[in-house]
Image 1 (cartoon, rainbow over the protein chains, first blue to last red):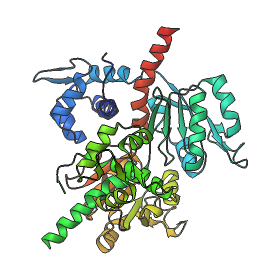
Image 2 (image 1 turned 45 degrees about the horizontal axis):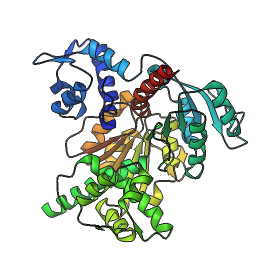
Image 3 (image 1 turned 90 degrees about the vertical axis):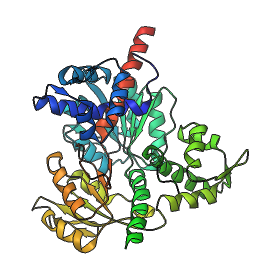
Length: 215
Length: 215
């Protein structure tokens, strides 16, 4: 497998994978890059280029074999196994994350949850009991989870991320509105609704200007 | 302003804007593309290229004037005004979104919240009272909000999105794990932690393989 696949390509693969799983469940055997593109709002050329990084999945003019491509993507993305996840921050957002039923079917097990609030430690959130954040460093050493989800306030987030990195966690999903600093070997993905909204207001502003000039 | 700026560039501008606001608050007057890049994990060349779409902000060898660039980005991104947001879905996640204090300081006002559960309608979530989702279409007609946030279950999401689009909403932040179908003039951003995790497990899998081969 090539080593220098752009992150922007990697980050599209889960979209393809989810759509292919749905197609497979619906009994679709073959799908074209046109059909994939239409369903995802991505050009067929982009899809062909993205998938070409990983070998020749499609046959010219015949489309992609759904089952085979799904299985290849599952392996490429590392979804043929389960991943152990710790969650830090059990406020309203963290509670919603801990209770989300979308993680388990995709192979992500939240194995421990932590909070800095002494009143929250000891509380049960579905099957798990909230642990004090002071226990995090020792737990990481002992249990070696794969992924950390950070849902603490902005001013506490970098400290928690540093603890995760020192504890050997190489993948961090950061809900706190900060640009996390991590070593290059650690992956971070940011979930930030304000940044997403601000990417859309650019278009709204132009659209509004267009509408006014037509009026 | 040029019309054909790639979305991937637009979506980086809020990152620059947030960092520049922090720098301005700290009293920094001038910043180089190297310093911006280091703080954000983006190459200085990429930052210079992104900002060059919008005119010549920086002077060769002297860096960017923080206050001027912040103000220009505020206008470019449409953050020099307030935006009216409706939220549909007031389960655990929707409640966390409705209670999030990060929207207001950035100009986003959640003006109405909706839920399909008859037991949730009428409940107060901070200053707002949950309305029945059946009222959404009429409310959109009367109140013309700018943005819809969708936090309903996957199987209800496309219907809600269709209602928003018919009601004239041109920007949708979608938390439901579906690939939303919208007309080309409507912006959608997806917030999906599973997709974000799956983009990282690709790297974890390779990293793990590396570690094992070194062991």
